Image (cartoon, rainbow over all chains, first blue to last red; front, side):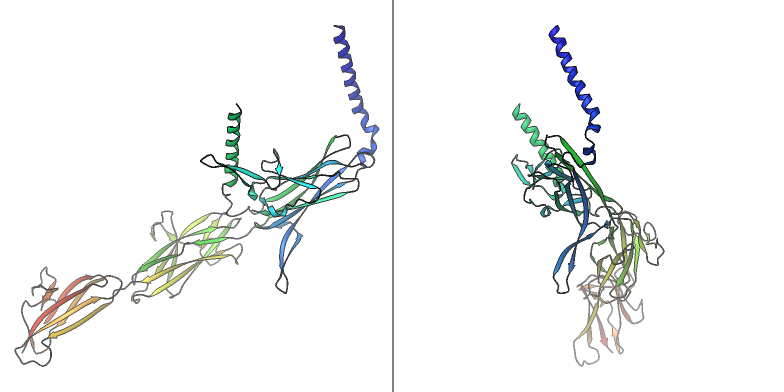
Length: 181
Length: 300
């Protein structure tokens, strides 16, 4: 009985210390709240542009992008995700994640595996992930199983995993395109 | 147990795959006015492995309206002179917002063309079930009425073939739907009408030929042929006997069958319907059909 009581006491003490540290943390780390002094502080920004094809006077076609507020079905939107570490230390295991917007389908060849980045894809709104490009398993009537590339409209989310830390002051951009259905 | 679990998993995969490969039902595209929004997330850890997360701003792109029209199908039919040939078309708003599609027609032969709204049964009944296409937006052109995205109506194009139009005449009537939202968006279908009219030829010969003395009996042979592409109805041969001859009683034959001279059921008479005239009611001659009528006279 005595042993048990001691154990309980120790456990309570730990809990008390934990509560104390939570209560103290704002006062102890004012710099962290401002994102200046302590730890990594990664922000992310999204911008969108529309892809347009311009025909030059000599007949050649050039693909450019322009700001967009309104678009029509068939238009290609280019999303740029920009992650920036404004903190004091490196951010590890940085993962930029973005759902494919409703009403659009991913442009598959717009997703590239840049240096130091692994792109994952989800076909189920982020519940499960696989390396891009995703595949889906088809089972024929005769039971034969076949893995085939997932069609663009099957993609629901993309995730860019930075293989190296994002150091203070660093910015990392990733891009992908979707077509409005 | 493992085998059962695997089987269940593969079934789920199959269902998912089926969902992915079902053709998406967005013929019209994303509806006008729908916002396309995007917000990204970044997850990361500090040096101690504590998870941290930030959300991005939200960017919004609004889908604008685009016009879209289809008019199908192309049709072809035969028509007799004086007939109205009707063609059914489906007019669809393939845009991504509500639109009214103006309907116009143009006949290559300049014939009269009317537009009717089908009542849903696909049977042309002008004036009973099918009403003339209305100008719902009062812009001076009859139209489909207001159609939401992907909605369609069935429309009749009634082409009137003028009486007396020659056999084999071809008319191409173009029916065009134009988006009221965007007048540059149009689609057309064609209705090709080939006129099938009867074309009768009559040849007459006499035996014996050449100069003959009085008292000679002459046999006249009249061949009537329909060289056209439609039935010739109510064909009647009237042939007054020549001057200075006397009709030989009961000498009329049609296709080698004897006919009486009186007005009875055998469709031929002499001197009854018209004086001193052979009259034969041939009736209907189908395309390529012919009939041969003979009668005799004696030279006075």
